[in-house]
Length: 411
Image 1 (cartoon, rainbow, N blue to C red):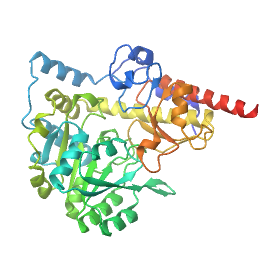
Image 2 (spheres, rainbow, N blue to C red; image 1 turned 180 degrees about the vertical axis):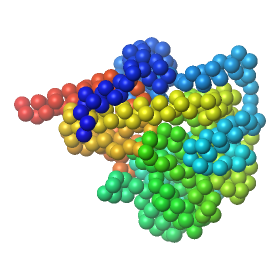
Image 3 (cartoon, rainbow, N blue to C red; image 1 turned 135 degrees about the vertical axis):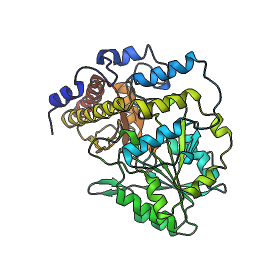
Image 4 (cartoon, helix red, strand yellow; image 1 turned 120 degrees about the vertical axis):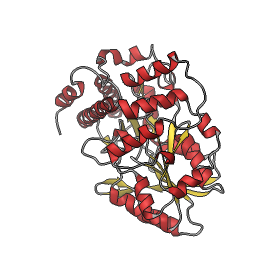
Protein backbone atom coordinates (compact mmCIF):
# COMPACT_ATOMS: atom_id res chain seq x y z
CA UNK A 1 0.00 0.00 0.00
CA UNK A 2 1.14 3.55 -0.72
CA UNK A 3 2.54 5.29 2.36
CA UNK A 4 0.47 7.62 4.50
CA UNK A 5 2.72 10.53 3.53
CA UNK A 6 2.19 9.92 -0.17
CA UNK A 7 -1.58 9.57 0.28
CA UNK A 8 -1.68 12.73 2.37
CA UNK A 9 0.20 14.73 -0.26
CA UNK A 10 -2.10 13.41 -2.98
CA UNK A 11 -5.19 14.34 -0.98
CA UNK A 12 -3.92 17.82 -0.14
CA UNK A 13 -3.21 18.36 -3.85
CA UNK A 14 -2.99 22.05 -4.72
CA UNK A 15 -4.26 22.99 -1.26
CA UNK A 16 -7.85 23.63 -2.27
CA UNK A 17 -11.16 21.81 -2.51
CA UNK A 18 -13.11 21.26 -5.80
CA UNK A 19 -14.40 24.87 -5.70
CA UNK A 20 -10.93 26.32 -5.11
CA UNK A 21 -11.52 26.97 -1.41
CA UNK A 22 -8.33 26.66 0.70
CA UNK A 23 -8.40 23.64 3.01
CA UNK A 24 -7.82 25.92 6.01
CA UNK A 25 -11.26 27.45 5.44
CA UNK A 26 -12.87 24.01 5.73
CA UNK A 27 -11.66 23.19 9.21
CA UNK A 28 -14.59 21.87 11.28
CA UNK A 29 -14.24 24.68 13.83
CA UNK A 30 -14.63 27.23 11.02
CA UNK A 31 -17.58 25.52 9.35
CA UNK A 32 -19.41 25.01 12.65
CA UNK A 33 -19.67 28.78 12.95
CA UNK A 34 -21.06 29.20 9.44
CA UNK A 35 -23.44 26.31 8.78
CA UNK A 36 -26.68 25.36 10.48
CA UNK A 37 -27.63 21.92 9.10
CA UNK A 38 -27.93 18.87 11.36
CA UNK A 39 -24.39 17.90 10.45
CA UNK A 40 -23.17 20.85 12.50
CA UNK A 41 -25.78 20.99 15.25
CA UNK A 42 -26.51 17.41 16.29
CA UNK A 43 -23.16 16.66 17.98
CA UNK A 44 -21.67 19.98 19.09
CA UNK A 45 -17.90 19.88 19.44
CA UNK A 46 -17.50 16.52 17.67
CA UNK A 47 -15.97 15.97 14.24
CA UNK A 48 -19.21 15.55 12.21
CA UNK A 49 -18.51 12.68 9.82
CA UNK A 50 -21.89 10.96 9.79
CA UNK A 51 -24.60 12.51 7.60
CA UNK A 52 -23.96 12.55 3.83
CA UNK A 53 -23.33 16.26 3.39
CA UNK A 54 -20.09 17.63 1.99
CA UNK A 55 -17.87 20.15 3.70
CA UNK A 56 -17.01 21.43 0.20
CA UNK A 57 -18.78 24.65 -0.85
CA UNK A 58 -21.44 24.37 -3.54
CA UNK A 59 -20.23 24.66 -7.13
CA UNK A 60 -20.08 28.27 -8.39
CA UNK A 61 -22.41 27.47 -11.28
CA UNK A 62 -25.09 26.35 -8.85
CA UNK A 63 -24.60 29.33 -6.54
CA UNK A 64 -25.02 31.69 -9.49
CA UNK A 65 -28.19 29.91 -10.64
CA UNK A 66 -29.73 30.17 -7.16
CA UNK A 67 -28.80 33.84 -6.77
CA UNK A 68 -30.33 34.57 -10.18
CA UNK A 69 -33.62 32.90 -9.19
CA UNK A 70 -33.74 34.79 -5.86
CA UNK A 71 -33.04 38.11 -7.57
CA UNK A 72 -35.95 37.34 -9.92
CA UNK A 73 -38.17 36.45 -6.91
CA UNK A 74 -38.74 33.13 -8.67
CA UNK A 75 -39.86 31.20 -5.60
CA UNK A 76 -43.29 29.86 -6.54
CA UNK A 77 -44.80 26.42 -7.10
CA UNK A 78 -43.80 23.93 -9.80
CA UNK A 79 -46.14 22.27 -12.26
CA UNK A 80 -43.77 20.21 -14.42
CA UNK A 81 -40.08 19.17 -14.47
CA UNK A 82 -39.55 21.88 -17.10
CA UNK A 83 -35.85 22.30 -17.89
CA UNK A 84 -34.83 19.55 -15.48
CA UNK A 85 -36.05 16.76 -17.77
CA UNK A 86 -33.67 17.61 -20.65
CA UNK A 87 -30.84 18.52 -18.28
CA UNK A 88 -31.03 15.12 -16.56
CA UNK A 89 -31.56 13.27 -19.83
CA UNK A 90 -28.50 14.90 -21.40
CA UNK A 91 -26.38 14.00 -18.36
CA UNK A 92 -27.64 10.40 -18.36
CA UNK A 93 -26.88 10.06 -22.06
CA UNK A 94 -23.43 11.63 -21.87
CA UNK A 95 -22.25 9.88 -18.72
CA UNK A 96 -24.01 6.49 -18.86
CA UNK A 97 -25.34 6.02 -22.39
CA UNK A 98 -28.91 6.00 -21.07
CA UNK A 99 -31.43 7.55 -23.45
CA UNK A 100 -34.21 9.00 -21.29
CA UNK A 101 -37.42 10.25 -22.95
CA UNK A 102 -38.19 13.62 -21.40
CA UNK A 103 -41.76 12.66 -20.58
CA UNK A 104 -40.49 9.69 -18.51
CA UNK A 105 -39.08 12.20 -15.96
CA UNK A 106 -41.34 13.09 -13.02
CA UNK A 107 -40.68 15.42 -10.08
CA UNK A 108 -40.53 14.59 -6.38
CA UNK A 109 -39.51 16.52 -3.28
CA UNK A 110 -36.51 14.27 -2.67
CA UNK A 111 -35.40 10.71 -3.38
CA UNK A 112 -37.11 9.33 -0.27
CA UNK A 113 -40.39 10.86 -1.38
CA UNK A 114 -39.77 9.50 -4.86
CA UNK A 115 -39.41 5.98 -3.50
CA UNK A 116 -42.57 6.21 -1.40
CA UNK A 117 -44.71 7.80 -4.11
CA UNK A 118 -43.46 5.39 -6.78
CA UNK A 119 -44.43 2.44 -4.58
CA UNK A 120 -47.86 3.96 -3.96
CA UNK A 121 -48.42 4.51 -7.68
CA UNK A 122 -47.06 1.21 -9.00
CA UNK A 123 -47.95 -1.14 -6.12
CA UNK A 124 -50.91 0.57 -4.41
CA UNK A 125 -51.92 -2.59 -2.53
CA UNK A 126 -48.50 -2.91 -0.90
CA UNK A 127 -47.25 -6.38 -0.04
CA UNK A 128 -43.73 -7.59 0.64
CA UNK A 129 -40.65 -5.61 -0.33
CA UNK A 130 -37.12 -7.03 -0.43
CA UNK A 131 -34.21 -4.82 0.63
CA UNK A 132 -30.55 -5.92 0.29
CA UNK A 133 -28.72 -5.09 3.52
CA UNK A 134 -26.81 -3.51 5.15
CA UNK A 135 -28.17 -0.45 3.40
CA UNK A 136 -28.92 3.25 3.82
CA UNK A 137 -30.99 3.54 7.04
CA UNK A 138 -33.43 5.93 5.40
CA UNK A 139 -34.86 2.99 3.46
CA UNK A 140 -36.34 1.58 6.66
CA UNK A 141 -37.67 4.98 7.72
CA UNK A 142 -39.36 5.77 4.41
CA UNK A 143 -40.91 2.30 4.06
CA UNK A 144 -42.87 2.88 7.27
CA UNK A 145 -45.06 5.19 5.17
CA UNK A 146 -46.29 2.46 2.80
CA UNK A 147 -48.14 -0.84 3.43
CA UNK A 148 -45.18 -3.13 2.84
CA UNK A 149 -43.57 -5.83 4.94
CA UNK A 150 -39.80 -5.36 4.69
CA UNK A 151 -37.79 -8.52 3.96
CA UNK A 152 -34.06 -7.99 4.49
CA UNK A 153 -31.76 -9.91 2.15
CA UNK A 154 -28.12 -9.71 3.31
CA UNK A 155 -25.50 -9.12 0.64
CA UNK A 156 -23.60 -12.25 -0.36
CA UNK A 157 -20.09 -12.39 1.13
CA UNK A 158 -18.08 -13.38 -1.95
CA UNK A 159 -14.27 -13.59 -2.40
CA UNK A 160 -14.22 -10.30 -4.31
CA UNK A 161 -16.36 -8.57 -1.69
CA UNK A 162 -20.08 -8.28 -0.93
CA UNK A 163 -22.50 -8.44 -3.85
CA UNK A 164 -26.23 -8.75 -4.42
CA UNK A 165 -27.36 -12.25 -3.43
CA UNK A 166 -29.18 -13.08 -6.66
CA UNK A 167 -29.97 -16.72 -5.78
CA UNK A 168 -31.54 -15.60 -2.48
CA UNK A 169 -33.54 -12.91 -4.25
CA UNK A 170 -34.78 -15.32 -6.92
CA UNK A 171 -35.84 -17.83 -4.26
CA UNK A 172 -37.80 -15.09 -2.49
CA UNK A 173 -39.39 -13.90 -5.74
CA UNK A 174 -40.51 -17.44 -6.54
CA UNK A 175 -41.67 -18.26 -3.02
CA UNK A 176 -45.06 -18.29 -1.45
CA UNK A 177 -46.18 -15.56 -0.69
CA UNK A 178 -43.34 -14.18 -2.83
CA UNK A 179 -42.17 -10.58 -3.21
CA UNK A 180 -44.05 -7.63 -4.69
CA UNK A 181 -41.26 -5.07 -4.88
CA UNK A 182 -37.50 -4.69 -4.50
CA UNK A 183 -35.69 -1.54 -3.39
CA UNK A 184 -32.01 -1.38 -4.33
CA UNK A 185 -29.26 1.15 -3.78
CA UNK A 186 -27.21 1.53 -7.00
CA UNK A 187 -24.35 2.27 -6.30
CA UNK A 188 -24.81 0.56 -2.97
CA UNK A 189 -24.72 2.71 0.14
CA UNK A 190 -22.79 2.17 2.47
CA UNK A 191 -20.25 -0.06 0.70
CA UNK A 192 -19.83 2.01 -2.46
CA UNK A 193 -20.44 -1.09 -4.58
CA UNK A 194 -21.11 -0.39 -8.26
CA UNK A 195 -23.34 -3.28 -9.31
CA UNK A 196 -21.99 -5.09 -12.38
CA UNK A 197 -23.93 -5.11 -15.62
CA UNK A 198 -24.29 -8.89 -15.57
CA UNK A 199 -25.72 -8.76 -12.04
CA UNK A 200 -28.28 -6.14 -12.98
CA UNK A 201 -29.23 -7.95 -16.18
CA UNK A 202 -29.92 -11.10 -14.17
CA UNK A 203 -31.84 -9.08 -11.59
CA UNK A 204 -33.98 -7.58 -14.36
CA UNK A 205 -34.63 -11.05 -15.79
CA UNK A 206 -35.82 -12.57 -12.51
CA UNK A 207 -37.84 -9.47 -11.62
CA UNK A 208 -39.64 -9.67 -14.98
CA UNK A 209 -40.23 -13.40 -14.58
CA UNK A 210 -41.96 -12.90 -11.23
CA UNK A 211 -43.51 -9.46 -11.87
CA UNK A 212 -41.53 -7.81 -9.08
CA UNK A 213 -41.42 -4.02 -9.19
CA UNK A 214 -37.86 -2.72 -8.84
CA UNK A 215 -37.19 0.76 -7.45
CA UNK A 216 -33.56 1.71 -7.99
CA UNK A 217 -32.17 4.54 -5.84
CA UNK A 218 -29.29 5.91 -7.96
CA UNK A 219 -28.55 9.08 -6.03
CA UNK A 220 -24.83 8.28 -5.69
CA UNK A 221 -24.36 7.38 -9.38
CA UNK A 222 -22.78 10.71 -10.43
CA UNK A 223 -20.04 10.03 -7.85
CA UNK A 224 -18.85 6.79 -9.45
CA UNK A 225 -15.07 6.60 -9.24
CA UNK A 226 -12.84 6.68 -12.27
CA UNK A 227 -12.21 3.21 -13.68
CA UNK A 228 -15.57 1.88 -12.48
CA UNK A 229 -18.61 1.62 -14.74
CA UNK A 230 -21.96 2.70 -13.37
CA UNK A 231 -24.84 0.87 -15.05
CA UNK A 232 -28.32 2.41 -14.72
CA UNK A 233 -30.95 -0.23 -14.04
CA UNK A 234 -33.79 1.23 -16.10
CA UNK A 235 -32.52 0.34 -19.61
CA UNK A 236 -31.85 -3.24 -18.51
CA UNK A 237 -35.30 -3.46 -16.94
CA UNK A 238 -36.88 -2.14 -20.13
CA UNK A 239 -35.01 -4.72 -22.23
CA UNK A 240 -36.14 -7.53 -19.93
CA UNK A 241 -39.72 -6.34 -19.66
CA UNK A 242 -39.44 -5.68 -15.92
CA UNK A 243 -41.50 -3.03 -14.16
CA UNK A 244 -39.04 -0.49 -12.74
CA UNK A 245 -38.42 3.13 -11.86
CA UNK A 246 -35.32 5.07 -10.90
CA UNK A 247 -35.21 7.71 -8.19
CA UNK A 248 -32.31 10.13 -8.20
CA UNK A 249 -31.19 13.72 -7.72
CA UNK A 250 -28.17 15.98 -7.91
CA UNK A 251 -28.33 16.28 -4.13
CA UNK A 252 -25.49 13.90 -3.25
CA UNK A 253 -23.22 14.50 -6.23
CA UNK A 254 -23.30 18.28 -5.87
CA UNK A 255 -23.99 18.74 -2.12
CA UNK A 256 -27.60 19.90 -2.46
CA UNK A 257 -29.28 17.79 0.21
CA UNK A 258 -31.53 20.53 1.55
CA UNK A 259 -32.75 22.09 -1.71
CA UNK A 260 -35.50 19.45 -2.06
CA UNK A 261 -35.83 18.34 -5.64
CA UNK A 262 -35.51 14.88 -7.18
CA UNK A 263 -36.73 12.91 -10.18
CA UNK A 264 -38.59 9.64 -10.60
CA UNK A 265 -37.74 8.15 -13.99
CA UNK A 266 -39.85 5.45 -15.63
CA UNK A 267 -37.96 2.53 -17.16
CA UNK A 268 -40.52 1.98 -19.91
CA UNK A 269 -43.96 3.06 -21.14
CA UNK A 270 -45.75 0.70 -18.75
CA UNK A 271 -44.05 2.25 -15.72
CA UNK A 272 -44.55 5.74 -17.12
CA UNK A 273 -48.28 5.20 -17.51
CA UNK A 274 -48.50 4.11 -13.87
CA UNK A 275 -46.44 7.11 -12.73
CA UNK A 276 -49.13 9.34 -14.20
CA UNK A 277 -51.11 8.35 -11.10
CA UNK A 278 -48.74 10.38 -8.93
CA UNK A 279 -50.72 12.97 -6.96
CA UNK A 280 -50.18 16.61 -8.03
CA UNK A 281 -48.57 17.33 -4.65
CA UNK A 282 -45.63 15.15 -5.61
CA UNK A 283 -44.69 17.89 -8.07
CA UNK A 284 -45.85 21.01 -6.25
CA UNK A 285 -43.99 20.07 -3.06
CA UNK A 286 -40.66 20.07 -4.89
CA UNK A 287 -38.66 23.26 -4.54
CA UNK A 288 -38.34 25.57 -7.52
CA UNK A 289 -34.92 26.60 -6.21
CA UNK A 290 -34.01 22.94 -5.97
CA UNK A 291 -35.10 22.39 -9.55
CA UNK A 292 -32.87 25.16 -10.86
CA UNK A 293 -29.99 23.94 -8.68
CA UNK A 294 -30.39 20.47 -10.18
CA UNK A 295 -30.48 21.89 -13.71
CA UNK A 296 -27.28 23.84 -13.10
CA UNK A 297 -25.62 20.76 -11.60
CA UNK A 298 -26.43 18.32 -14.39
CA UNK A 299 -25.89 20.86 -17.17
CA UNK A 300 -23.20 23.28 -16.03
CA UNK A 301 -21.24 21.89 -13.05
CA UNK A 302 -19.84 18.67 -14.47
CA UNK A 303 -16.23 19.79 -14.11
CA UNK A 304 -16.83 20.50 -10.41
CA UNK A 305 -18.29 17.00 -10.06
CA UNK A 306 -15.24 15.45 -11.69
CA UNK A 307 -12.94 17.27 -9.27
CA UNK A 308 -15.10 16.10 -6.38
CA UNK A 309 -14.86 12.48 -7.52
CA UNK A 310 -11.08 12.79 -7.79
CA UNK A 311 -10.91 14.28 -4.28
CA UNK A 312 -13.17 11.55 -2.91
CA UNK A 313 -10.84 8.92 -4.36
CA UNK A 314 -7.79 10.64 -2.88
CA UNK A 315 -9.44 10.96 0.53
CA UNK A 316 -10.41 7.27 0.46
CA UNK A 317 -6.81 6.27 -0.29
CA UNK A 318 -5.70 8.45 2.61
CA UNK A 319 -8.19 6.82 4.96
CA UNK A 320 -7.11 3.34 3.88
CA UNK A 321 -3.44 4.14 4.50
CA UNK A 322 -4.15 5.75 7.87
CA UNK A 323 -6.29 2.83 9.03
CA UNK A 324 -3.69 0.28 7.96
CA UNK A 325 -0.97 2.14 9.86
CA UNK A 326 -2.77 3.38 12.97
CA UNK A 327 -5.95 1.37 13.68
CA UNK A 328 -5.57 -2.25 14.75
CA UNK A 329 -8.25 -4.65 13.60
CA UNK A 330 -10.17 -2.13 11.47
CA UNK A 331 -10.99 -2.82 7.83
CA UNK A 332 -12.18 -0.40 5.15
CA UNK A 333 -14.56 -1.77 2.53
CA UNK A 334 -13.40 -1.38 -1.06
CA UNK A 335 -15.46 1.43 -2.57
CA UNK A 336 -16.12 2.29 -6.21
CA UNK A 337 -18.42 5.27 -5.74
CA UNK A 338 -19.19 8.14 -3.44
CA UNK A 339 -17.46 9.79 -0.52
CA UNK A 340 -18.74 7.45 2.20
CA UNK A 341 -16.61 4.61 3.57
CA UNK A 342 -17.78 1.50 5.44
CA UNK A 343 -15.62 0.53 8.42
CA UNK A 344 -15.57 -2.96 9.92
CA UNK A 345 -14.81 -2.33 13.60
CA UNK A 346 -15.55 -5.82 14.92
CA UNK A 347 -11.87 -6.55 15.48
CA UNK A 348 -10.97 -3.13 16.85
CA UNK A 349 -11.46 -3.93 20.54
CA UNK A 350 -14.03 -1.17 20.96
CA UNK A 351 -16.85 -3.30 22.34
CA UNK A 352 -20.35 -4.04 21.09
CA UNK A 353 -21.09 -0.38 20.32
CA UNK A 354 -17.93 0.93 18.62
CA UNK A 355 -19.67 3.92 17.09
CA UNK A 356 -20.99 4.99 20.50
CA UNK A 357 -17.60 4.65 22.11
CA UNK A 358 -15.89 6.56 19.30
CA UNK A 359 -18.38 9.41 19.73
CA UNK A 360 -18.14 9.48 23.53
CA UNK A 361 -14.38 9.08 23.88
CA UNK A 362 -12.92 10.30 20.58
CA UNK A 363 -15.44 13.01 19.73
CA UNK A 364 -15.91 11.65 16.20
CA UNK A 365 -19.52 11.29 15.00
CA UNK A 366 -20.02 8.35 12.62
CA UNK A 367 -23.13 6.48 11.46
CA UNK A 368 -23.96 3.41 13.56
CA UNK A 369 -23.78 0.26 11.44
CA UNK A 370 -26.68 -1.29 13.34
CA UNK A 371 -29.09 1.17 11.74
CA UNK A 372 -28.21 -0.22 8.29
CA UNK A 373 -30.01 -3.52 8.93
CA UNK A 374 -28.77 -7.09 8.97
CA UNK A 375 -25.00 -7.28 8.57
CA UNK A 376 -24.38 -3.81 9.94
CA UNK A 377 -23.61 -4.55 13.60
CA UNK A 378 -20.01 -3.81 14.52
CA UNK A 379 -19.60 -1.43 11.58
CA UNK A 380 -19.75 2.32 11.07
CA UNK A 381 -19.96 4.66 8.10
CA UNK A 382 -17.64 7.64 7.78
CA UNK A 383 -18.03 10.69 5.53
CA UNK A 384 -14.87 11.66 3.62
CA UNK A 385 -16.15 14.77 1.80
CA UNK A 386 -13.96 17.02 3.92
CA UNK A 387 -10.47 18.43 4.22
CA UNK A 388 -7.77 15.72 4.38
CA UNK A 389 -6.65 17.00 7.78
CA UNK A 390 -10.11 16.24 9.15
CA UNK A 391 -9.64 12.60 8.18
CA UNK A 392 -6.20 12.52 9.79
CA UNK A 393 -7.60 14.04 12.99
CA UNK A 394 -10.48 11.54 13.10
CA UNK A 395 -8.18 8.53 12.75
CA UNK A 396 -5.74 9.93 15.32
CA UNK A 397 -8.56 10.38 17.83
CA UNK A 398 -9.83 6.84 17.30
CA UNK A 399 -6.28 5.49 17.58
CA UNK A 400 -5.88 7.20 20.95
CA UNK A 401 -9.05 5.53 22.22
CA UNK A 402 -7.74 2.18 21.00
CA UNK A 403 -4.40 2.81 22.69
CA UNK A 404 -6.02 3.75 25.98
CA UNK A 405 -8.10 0.60 25.85
CA UNK A 406 -5.05 -1.55 25.21
CA UNK A 407 -3.16 0.10 28.07
CA UNK A 408 -6.10 -0.41 30.42
CA UNK A 409 -6.30 -4.11 29.56
CA UNK A 410 -2.59 -4.53 30.28
CA UNK A 411 -2.79 -2.90 33.73
